[in-house]
Every structure is written in structure tokens, then in C-alpha cells.
View 1 (cartoon, one colour):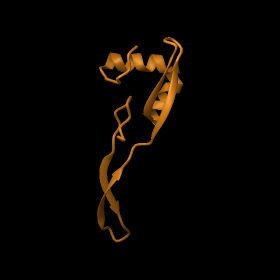
View 2 (cartoon, one colour; view 1 turned 120 degrees about the horizontal axis):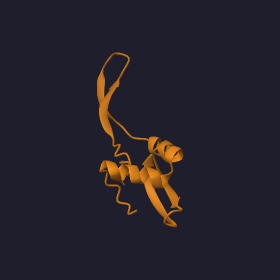
View 3 (tube, helix red, strand yellow; view 1 turned 90 degrees about the vertical axis):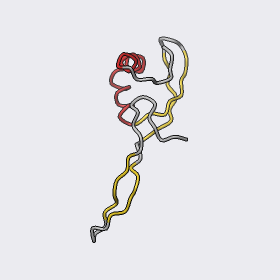
View 4 (tube, rainbow, N blue to C red; view 1 turned 180 degrees about the vertical axis):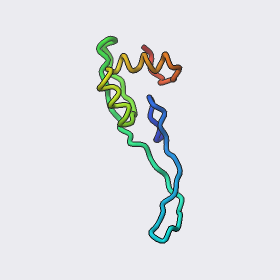
Length: 82
């Protein structure tokens, strides 16, 4: 199962874990992802998406259908047909 948000495209990034003695060890920072079902009233269907917390806040603010239209206008391929 991939760790990539379907709407924002957020993915794991690499960095360092830094100890008290300043020793750097490689680690991964994972995005805050949720698998969630959404109902689109305009089309009358349910969709299942893996979204980040920031995408959920945008959906709450704008509404799912409007947010998907905005992403489509920006050229982001979400894999969802409107």
C-alpha cells in the first residue's frame, strides 16, 4: 500500500534523526494519511480515497466536488471522473 495522498500528492520524505550527541541517522518522514469514503451528492456515488490531513481540511472548507474540480483545473490527475 503506497504512502501517497491521491489529492495533494504528498509522499514520504527523507531526513535525519539527530541524537543528543549530534549523530545523524537516516529516517523517513511519512505523511499523515487516512483511507476515507466520501459521498459525492452531485453524482450520487461513493468514492474511497487515501488522503492527507491537509486534503481533508481543504475538503471540509470547499466541499469535495469543488475541490476535485479545482485540482482538475490545476492539472492534477486524481483518477476520479467528474
